[in-house]
Image 1 (tube, chains in turn yellow, red):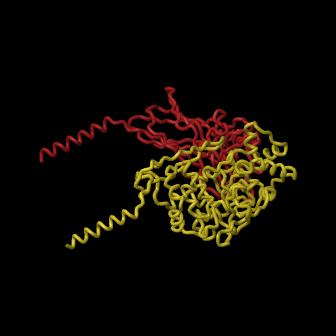
Image 2 (cartoon, chains in turn orange, brown):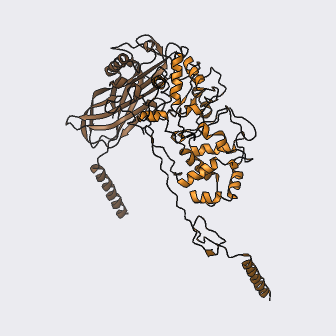
Image 3 (spheres, chains in turn orange, yellow):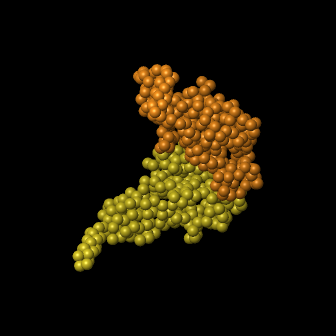
Amino acid sequence: MKSLIYLLLGTILIISCKKDLAPISGCTDNIAINYNPNAITEDQSCNYFNTTPYVIETPYGFPDMKIPFDNPMTVEGIALGEKLFRDPILSADKTQACINCHQQNFSFSDPIQFSTGIDNIQGNRNASALINIGWNTSFNWDGSSLTLEEQAFEPVTNSIEMHNTWMNVELELNSHSNYPFLFKQAFNINYIDSIHIVKAIAQFERTLISTNSKLDRYLKNEEQLTISELNGYAIFNTEKGDCFHCHSTNMFMDNLFHNNGLDNEPFTDLGRAKVTSNASDNGKFKTPTLRNVEMTAPYMHDGRFASLEEVVEHYDSGGKYSTTVDPLMKKLGVGLQLSNQEKIDLVSYLKTLTDNEFIGSD
Amino acid sequence: MKKTLLLISAIAFLFTSCDKDKAIKTDLTINFTHSVDDSELITNSMIYTNEAEENYDIQTLKYLISDIILHSENGNSLLLNEVHFIDISDESTFSFTYNDVPNNDYTSISFDMGLDTARNISNKYVNEDFHTTMYWPEPNGGGYHYMKFEGAYNNDSTFYNTHTGGTMGADYSFNYVENISLTVDNDLGNVSANINMELNNWYNSPNQIEFSSYGMGIMMNMMIQMNIQMNGNTDVFSVTIDK
């Protein structure tokens, strides 16, 4: 008798269930990225995980970019990364995206000395310009991150930046109308986690490549430099200005840390030593590339110089002594002794490193 | 019991006979060492004095050694490495190993300090670690620095930069040869060769080099480049073999 009741109840349940299910059509193949578990009728709409590889062409005078083995570049991953980079969904109050402090018009940097986070708190270092960043071997002014993926973890949870939690970001993205499909498409995952969020952002950042400046065209014999720019080119590339030792090769940086004589001791920001805990690294900061330097003001790790003219004045003064000042600052106390015209020429040359296509003004 | 014993001795015999037939491979490790006045280099300490009586410290030393070759009487030479970069701040650059050196009587070792004209070409080593740090700009002749040797002299805030390279395309690299006695045979096993750089000798005899004469730097100064090259080829390098 009892079993009869159960049977009856069960039947009712099944019938009522069936009633609730409208005959949904969709992809019924559970290995497809758009598999719809509610679909009953197959509508031939199944898409399968199939990413399109993206190859970075090595620019002249650059080494091959080292792509992490566990995060190969794909068209889908890059597009997703760009969407995330521009989406304020990553910040706690959904007001701030990566792009807010790394603005394309300013070569993916911030024209303000210290960027302001969602809680209106400012940091103490100038936001780095993201140019040819895939060739960097460490990130942040003190090199605290060793990969772009690792770096992308920081701003999201930093209390003076996006001040969010990864748990919250994951919740937001997993319940979003579009992101679950995009992540499935790019990485073939069913649950969006922080690891894949930073992977996508890093893939996008590796595509921020700038090598179409006036100087590049000059080196390819496609465009001529002015007399003033050529003079600046010579000052930059000889020990007269001695810029090239740190801002070296076509990358205009050396992936190393230097104390360029900005301050006497004690330093307010220990720089590289914060990472290494080694006093010999006090006051050292990572050499930034000079590509698009015209667009990345203010300058230095703390954005203390508003203009390129001020930067040139600093080097022309020879810099200040401290125990860790780089021996390359060999005009310390004497100065470069550039004439006013030579300073103008040097700035003119630096402006030939602007790539209008990259900053989106072409 | 008897059977087991027999088996053991048979196996033991097998191993012994194997050993006899098997030649021991020789891996040659080249070590780069640095001294000042015959003592091991101490960096960042103003304890050295050159012939011009300038006190100095050594903060940076990076250099390229190329075309490292073992030579033998029978004319067979062995290229050990095309280019090796040494940086005193990075111990991993202090040596490299050439595996399985062929049997021969090696009578000398030679190498170039820096890069000769055929190798000293801009972007030739674009994917090597030293590409950015040793870069030598086109307006100065292009290619790479042979050596960056930097520090302070006389007081902590006066710096010297001994940067050598192909000034305006001139070749100031030099080939150094030293006779050695190294017989590689089936019994030798691993061996190492130590290439020592006696740093103070870059500045002494036959040419006295004064840091105070460097002016705006020496990268464009052909006379100083030539004098340093001559000093380097005189008594900066020495090679010892450890068997």
